[in-house]
View 1 (tube, rainbow, N blue to C red):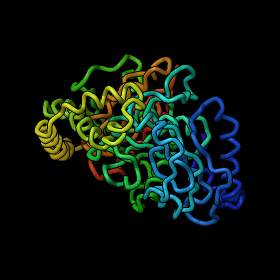
View 2 (view 1 turned 90 degrees about the horizontal axis):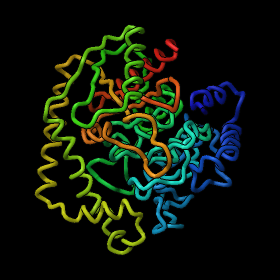
View 3 (view 1 turned 60 degrees about the horizontal axis):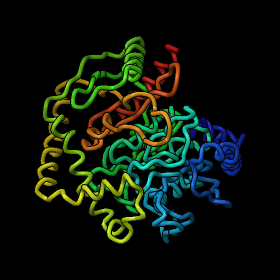
View 4 (view 1 turned 45 degrees about the vertical axis):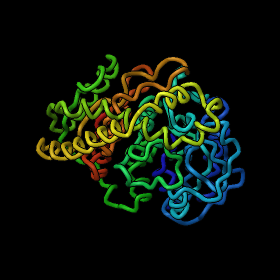
Length: 412
C-alpha cells in the first residue's frame, strides 16, 4: 500500500517532488483500477501544490462528498452527471493543506447497502464492504495513500476490516459534514482510510487542525469487550481478536475484561429507528420524485421508514443520549484508555450480493466515539479488530492502534 508518511518523507528529503508523488499515484490507479473498479471519476489534469503539509498526497473522495471539479453522483442514476459548484468543507480543507482530491470513489447508492461493482483487492471473490467500498478498496490496492469515507452504521470500520487497511471513524463532528449528502444527521460521520495507524493519525491531525491527535504509540490500558448486545461473531473473528489480545499483552499492555450494562442493548436496538426516521426525510425528494429509480434495498428501506412516527424517534433519541452520557462515566470508572473489540462478524462475505453486517459498529457510531480498525495478520482473507476510546479522545484511539499495529508486527 502507499504510505502517506513515506511519500511525505521523500518529498521533504528532496528525493521526490509533490508532482512526482501524484504521478506515482496515477500510475498505480492506471494499473489496478480496471480490476478493482473503485473509482467513478478522476481528475485528468490535477493542480498539484508544491507546498503544504499534505502536498503530493492524492486523496480519494467518496462520491457523496461534493467536489467542484468532479461530479458527485452518489452512486445513483438519479444524480448522474451532477456537478456541484462548490467543494464540501472537508475537500476545501484538504486543498488548503496541499492535498490533491484526485478521484471520486465508489459508494453504495446514497451510502446505504445496495452493493457496488467494486472488488476487494485483498480477498478476490469477496465483497469489499460498504458503503465506502471504493475508498477502502483503493487504499488496499495501493492506488491511493488516503481516502475519505463516511459512516452511519459501519461504513468505514467494516470495509477497512474486510480490505485489510486502517479505517478511522473520528469523534462525531470532529470533521465537518457540510457538503456531504446526508442520510442521518444524528449519525453520519466522516472517516479516513490509510495504510497505517500513523498515516491516519497524521492525516486526521492535519485535517482537524488538532496536532495533539498525532502522538507516539504508548502502552494502553485495554478493556476487552465481547459484545453481548447482538448476535455473536464467527470463529475467525474471535480468533483475530484473541491474536490481537495476545500481541498486546506480550508488548506489555494491561488487559482486563470489559462489559456494558443492559442500557446499551437498548441503545443498540434504537439505532435503526434513528437512522430510518432521518433517512426518510434526508432522501424525501429522491423518494417522492424517483422512487422507482432507487435500488431495491434502499427503496424497501424507505418504504418501511415512512411508518416511523415522531414519538418513536424521540424516544430512541432519549435512549441514545442517556447511553452516551453513561458511556463516558463507565469508561472513566473502568480505569481504561481504550476498548478492544470486534470490527466485523468475520471474513468479508463471499460474492457481491451483500456489503456485510455492521452489527459490531452501529452502537459505537451512535455513541459518537472514535473508532479505529487495525488489520490482524493471519491466514485467509483480511480480518481486523476495533479500538474505541471515549468521546473526544481520538488521540488515545490512534495511539493505541499504533501500539497494537507494532505489537502484531513484532509477534508475527
